[in-house]
Image (cartoon, rainbow, N blue to C red; front, side, top):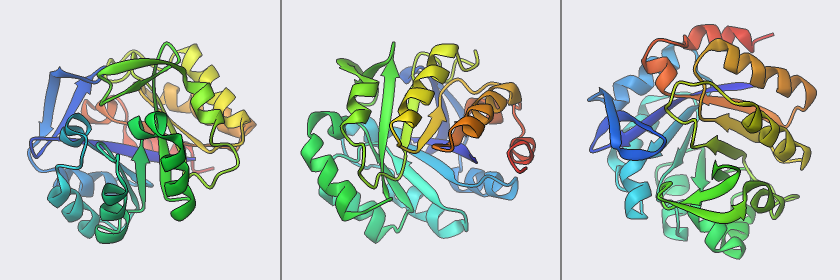
Length: 246
């Protein structure tokens, strides 16, 4: 199981939000590239990058910074935030040569388009499944739909999706741990046969241990993303990597 340190970029800085709320922002660094290098040095398996400006604007904004991060690292990167057109997908995968892109909003709005991108770029397009009370949230988490997260995921069973990144936004950035409902959702998505990465609420090593235990039951649980916890020193990336290294 992979440990994925998260870097959220807004106004060129490395930040974290609470519950996806742009009004509840904490700045953790002025240089996202240096922060990315730190997480690589500490053993992170893959970097999870979110273009928060892009998520709000509906198109990638922090392209230059993402490019510099990609050029500086040897570990793979996955990028989300405003990836809603074929042009945006190609820019990230072909021009910037990032490992994977994450599509959320457009997968709900235009499933046929999302399927075409997954088939054109097998194992390089991920489904960003952001949920509140198990319902899909879109538009940079600004809207909550009436579509159950599990229902959206089930539409893409059998396709070469890179991963499903499942985030319970009620937990994200709140430092309250991963709740049982989220663990249940992760298990249900994994049962569909889709590779799933846990995100949102990781506060301690115990949270990572819980996801890791699930991965022992179902190998489709392939990773866990951690953000605020590593910036506030609640989780040590090196320790997390050792935990899953057996």
